[in-house]
Length: 403
Image (cartoon, rainbow, N blue to C red; front, side, top):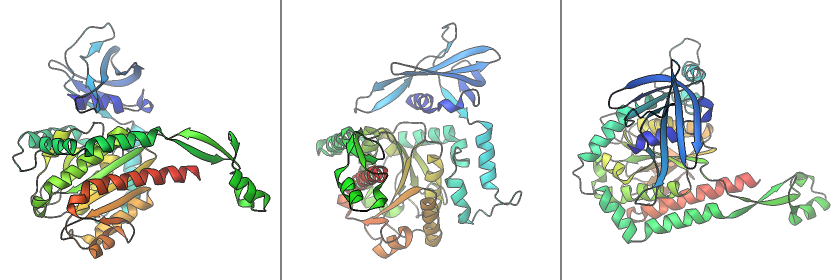
């Protein structure tokens, strides 16, 4: 039920009077217009108007046993505080203008069909602000399928064992502590106004360097939190059988780091069938350890649809910075198309970093992610290396902000 709460927590204020909401309880199925969003003391409620009757769909934030925060839904109530039962599902449709924007991006030829193999069109699709098309229109179904896979997991790397190993080894505690420390730091911002003169730039300006004219003052600020959207495309092909534990531990460690600084995270694994990826953690929900049980090694390496899928799932989430991590141990099919999609994502403002280990060669990683867009590591080092790369990305974002 926490996933329902996560949806309530994620709906933006801009959807008021513009978005349609459908929800169900044990005895009701209601559709209406989102008329208001009310927030008080760790509680958030969506107010849905159905022909003059208001329904309050609320969730309250709490700390779970693993230290992560989650949003727990409350019983549905009318405006007269009459309880109508537990909230079982919720669907929020975006405003019409966002749907029209999606159609315009998908049809750049003003009526001509977009070639599905023409990845140059991915720039307009992935860079858009709409919800993510096919990737997100059936999120409820994908989550249900994810939960069923997780409940029926019989592999050799259950999420509970991975969680316990990370805790016992101190990695989980270290990751959370380091990232919370990072966002609690004060950073020095250089600008045209501030609290005090920036001495190095003042000296440069007095020496005749006019390029620093707008950077003569500095001030201290806290780092922003929750400003990133992080995506992971995890290779779970058959060759990953001997690395399943390490790969999932890396994903778990990175998810802990993202949660510690309130960044949004979306995770998919591939393959699921020949050309699909499996949802692990989607938008509008908090990551949970059992999500890792929703995938196990099998099949080939269809990286192209997986990277496209995770990018589309990231679309509805608001964040100044976006980064996709691709974890793999092999050469994918359609490698040239993967490289083109990676370039398109970067042009659209999403950083992409490839992580390779095992039998995948550095030349393949360079082909896919460019010479400075990948890391080749030993499988045992994968958890710490992935978290370190994420930390480096955060520090890079902060340094760019200070310019």
